[in-house]
Structures are given as structure tokens and as C-alpha cells.
Amino acid sequence: MLIKTLAFVLHHFPYGERSIIVRMYTREVGLQSYLIPSARGKNSPLTPALMNPLQGLELIAYNHNDDRLERIKETARINKVDVIHQHPIKTTIAQFMAEVILRSTQDQEPNSELFDFISHAAEQLENPVNDLANLPLFFTLKLTEYLGFYPHALSGGCVLDLREGAFSVGIPHHPDFAKEQDSKAILEVLGKPWTQCQRTPLASETRLAGLKTLEKYYRIHLNERLGFKSLDVLHMVLS
Image 1 (cartoon, rainbow, N blue to C red):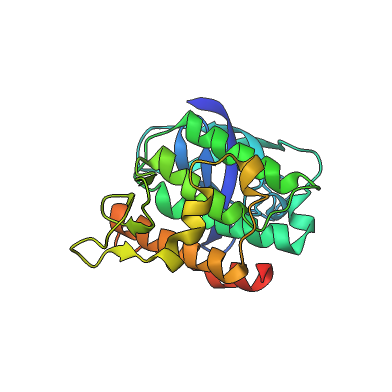
Image 2 (image 1 turned 90 degrees about the horizontal axis):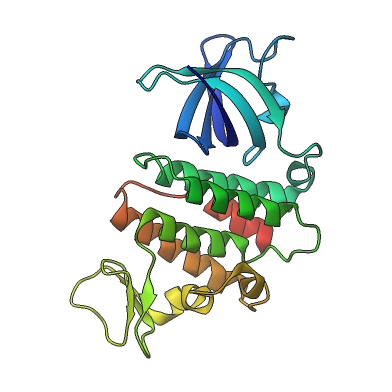
């Protein structure tokens, strides 16, 4: 069966001598792996120039609802001009966000609201006037709302209980918590829209501590082996 869907590229890697497998998050069928045979050939439905992280695409693709690698029939850019990947900082942020999506949606059902959130975040990257330093923190935190474990704050709480997903006043009776200095950035942007978050002043080290805390938070709620490999590079670029 052929389906038409919007999609964002997350990752790609070689398969055999000439083929490539591309992981995408799609609006209609969620996380998908597509086999691109002869990716550099003239008749390839997806060229290497369209495989950058968070590249937005319109796809016509085969969908068999089983474990086989699907194939793409046709592709087109959502936006005619690729703004993100002409800018090193935006490219690095896109790589980080794509990694977070890929590592956190492995077992998720298709979710159109999640897709629309990703699409909105990509639009912020494309906006030339946005201050993007807080976008990775905002995105990683807000994504937990769609994954089902968005933290909440109790009155006066400043210690993040990573198991319960709540800011508490005291230290919990287990080791899975983040002290005030490690969760300050999260508390600063918690519950705020992006328009406010981008204007919230946060030091580079405070943002990094917040992202590392969220990495632990994801690990507890999704997969104990989960980690964000691009986080250190992101910190270097944004420092």
C-alpha cells in the first residue's frame, strides 16, 4: 500500500555496497526505516542532499505494516530552501534534536501531535531572528509531555525527583534525583511556551546541567542504556 505523509529525517547509515537506510519520523506511521537502493544514482527517490537531520520531506512511500524495510517512491522538500543546514549552529542543534527523537520514539505509536511539535521546533530553527541557545533544553523537556512523563513542580520545590517526575522541597529517599544546581534550568523553562523560553537568561553551564539531568530522566523512564551522544558537541558549539 502507498501512503502520503510528511516526515523528518533523523539518521542514515550505509547498507551493503550502494544502499542507505534512512530513519525518519513520519506523521502517519511514526518512526520508520526506509531502504534507499543506489542512493547516489540518478533515479534515487532520496538523494544525499535530502538526508540531513531534521530535513522536512513530503513522502509517497510503501507501507506494509510488518517488519520489512519500507521503500520510498517519491520525495519533495517541505521547504524549497534548506535554511538549517547552511548554518553550523543550527545544524548542530538539529543533529541533537534528531538524536533525541530517534532514541526516545523507538517503541512509540504514531502520534500526529508529537509530529506537529517536532515540526514547530524545526520552524524555530529556520526563523532567522530566534535566539536558539535554549531551544535544545526546551525541546528535550517539552518532548516528555508527548512521551508521557512531563515533570511537574510542587510549591517551593527545587529538587527534581527523577523517578516521580516532580520538583520536591526535600531530598527523596532514593538516589535518583537532581539537586537544585543541576535542575535549575529545567525549573526555569518548565511550563513556559517557547516565546518565553528563548528570552530566559541561562548560563551555558546551567543549560548543560539541565540537559544532562534530562538525559538521566529519559534513561529512567524509557531505557537505562539511553544516552545523547551529541550533547557534548552541542555544548561546545553553544558555549
